[in-house]
Image (cartoon, rainbow, N blue to C red; front, side):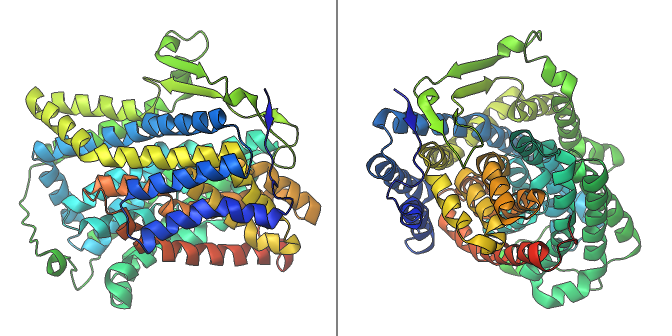
Length: 545
């Protein structure tokens, strides 16, 4: 029996939105005030969401259950699989002792840990975001920074904030490409507007990271190098997003930023070298290494880059689809119960069934690319099989509660999306008239908080943004871009991202601490972005379009 989503079950859009917001409010309270562990907060939030979906939204119990199971499984594969593989790769480099050599090679560029965070968290993280997305960048860079001597909570928080600038063009531009397909607007057109909105943030974020580490004194001491990193990133981001499309801005910007910053630091270093030794009482002793040793230390990440580039090629992906010779490795399952759920206007332009196909790509997924990198690393660095098994076992053992947390929060997201609760929130904000220009990026922010993905947020709310813009007589591409840009600052508080960052630095169960570290900055950023979009819509209408 077909079930049609009802976005206003209480015949009052704001009251319906309030009911939809209750699980989100509970999650915030669990982490900020009650300081509960992530899996406990996730479990309580899921329970409340299920109750509201059944009793208020009238969603059949079997559909609620299937939605949650679908989300939980999706949280395990591909999302958790990427994180497991990434942490496994890091552990291999650590157990082989080559990580110490890699660390020393970075310190050779600069011993200043403020600038090391910029190089690893911001620059290298942006490259990984552009290539793989799905939380992998935060997991890898946070683990690297902990190995460099940063406190785990600090490393995780800084990497989450650093990850904001590249999210819109993550995973080779998928957030914008996916939205383009849904709303029928050119991906290049959306990319161009996003490419005008993000550069100021891309310049600001490196300075903000230094401020968090060392205040205005740190900015005063490092601003030339930080400006080179941020400005080179922003310029290339602007040019590629406006003239080439959404696929390359992150990768090209990251490479340009790393190159420019590294070259600059050959001729300039801060007068005062800052380290976190006072905070963690850890003195890092470095030694000089041969070029061969340094090359071998970087081999895992060189292979990772090559593997990611291979996995993202169109011809490679074609091997796993249709009549491709490896299509058998991609399994698909149709969830018949979900096929009976229908989305309606104005969330979609034409009534249609929700996605009910679960795809399980055994090879054609980034997690497997990272695993292949790890296996090749074992061969090249001559890591013994028992050491590799020990590293993988440790990874699974350390991640068991984090895996549960990820499954719960993604399951929660699917319940919200399939019940229509997410759409209720967005529709309520869409009733604010011209003020929606301010709330437009907040819709994207909420979407990423709920789903953990800018891509999912764009798919969920792209049509709503488009229709609202038409009603207000505003160029629809502005609101489409605003949804994407709002989502980038929602990433740092997404329960999925929080759980991934915690497990990457060995802080499973400390999700509340990390959430409280990032939430205030995320809220401040989204308010500023909302004001900017409002000004672009009504005060300076030609500045972005």
